[in-house]
Image 1: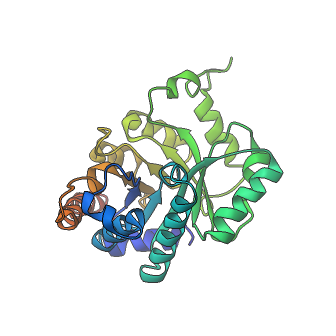
Image 2: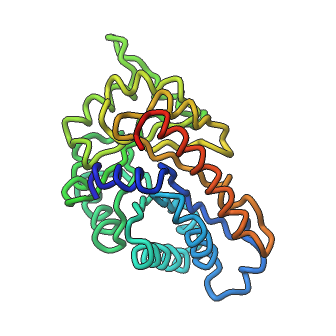
Amino acid sequence: MNAQNLFENIKRKKSFLCVGLDTDIKKIPQHLLETEDPMFEFNRIVVDNTQEYTVAYKPNLAFYECMGVQGWVSLQKTVDYIRTNYPDQFIIADAKRGDIGNTSQMYAKAFFEKMNFDAVTVAPYMGEDSVSPFLGYKDKWVILLALTSNKGAEDFQYFKNPEGEMLFEKVLRNSQKWADHNSMMYVVGATKAEKLAEIRKIVPNHFLLVPGVGAQGGSLQEVAEFGMTSTCGLLVNSSRAIIYVDTTPDFASHVKKAAMEVRDEMEILLKKKNLM
C-alpha cells in the first residue's frame, strides 16, 4: 500500500483513525477469559466493530510479548484475521525496533515476510544502517520515531546542536535522504500538537502517525489544524479511549459507538480541508 492508496481509503471511509490494539489481559472483559484465546477473541470483536470507521490497526507488541508464546500466537491470529476479512486495512507493528544492520534485517523479515505487517515503528538512534533493512520491501513502511508524547521526550529529543537544530528536527531532515513519502512515516505525539506546524515545514508530504489522542489528552482538532496536508497526511491513533470504553458483556456496542464518534469528528475535519 502506497501513500495514494492510503489516502483513497481515508476519503472512502471519511476517516484517518488508527485503532491501537493494546490488548491487556487484565483489562479485557472478564467473560472473554473463558474463551480459548481471550486476547484474539477481544481483538476480533474490536476489529469487527470498528473496521468500518478506521483505516488502520496498530498492535503494540509489548502486550503480546509479555504473554510469551501464546501472545505471539494471538498476535499472528489477529493479523491473519484482519488480512482475510478486511484486506483494505493498514496494519502497523508498534515494535519500536532499531539495531545493527544484520539484526534489523531479521526484524524486517519477521514483521514483513513472516507476519505480514504493512509497517513497523523504528527507533532512529543508531542511524541509517539500522533503518535501511526495513526499507527494502515493496509497499512496506518504516514509521520512524520523531517527536514522542511521553514526558521523557524532553531528555534527548529537544537537545540542540551548536546551529540551534533540535535532535528530532535532525532526524526528520536526515531521514528524508533514506526514503520518500511512499515508504516512510513519522511518529509525532498529539500532545506535541503545537510543534506540528514546524514539523510540516520540514516534512510537508510524509504521513504522520499521531498517538496520544483520547486517553492521553491530545486534541484531534489541533492535530488536524497544524498537521493535515492536501492528502490528509495523518493517521491518528486511539487505543484505550476506544477499546476499553466498556468492560461489560455488551462492550462491543460501546466500542463501535466510540469509534464512530471519532470517525464522525474526522469527517468534519476532512470536509473543512476540502478533502472529501
